[in-house]
Image (cartoon, rainbow, N blue to C red; front, side, top):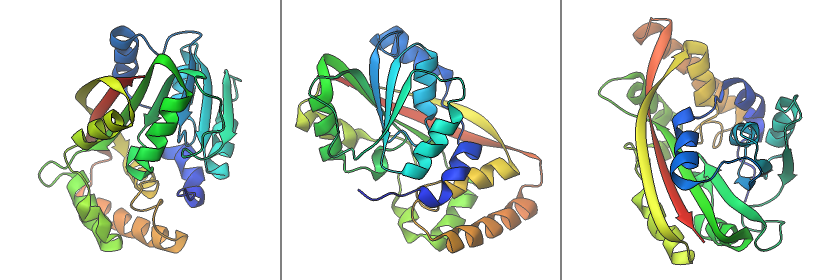
Length: 253
């Protein structure tokens, strides 16, 4: 599959924050994964947010992505030399032997991947009894909040935005992983509010699939200028409260 985010790779490191501690706590406490010395593959690792979090928990991590620019950012972030091996590769043809990993993560990436091929490959390289985690961390439209107003602007630049899931639930993914052979499928979800400055929100939107992952650099900059104007005119406060929903699927080989 093509490299979607190479033109905004620098923004990923600056404006993409990590995921809630509650997410990792549930993986550890309820599913027995993300534990020290486990061998994990993080597919579509991007700039290594999840890879870093898992390595900090003592896991041996391989982070795979098809963007050399994002992998460069991930390597640069790893100044403490955590146990992470970053690999350039395609999720549809994972460059690993069968039954290599104790568990596999795919966080905030499943929307843009060829899911049937990716989940089949995940099944192949996962050890018997290993877990596969798919998770999505979506911003939520609520009335006329900043998320809904930003989406209106996004739709001016990318009409496919109007086809997106606005509720943060993805039951169709459950059927997909079941079809390729995963079992013991469970889901969990929770909502959380994250605080952004205006600059952070603009940077986060530049790295979204609908903007940085779809548009030319010139179009990204035009969108960013319009978003800056929207924030100044409609959201004058220095801090923005952005509601999010974490939706996760945990399944087993």
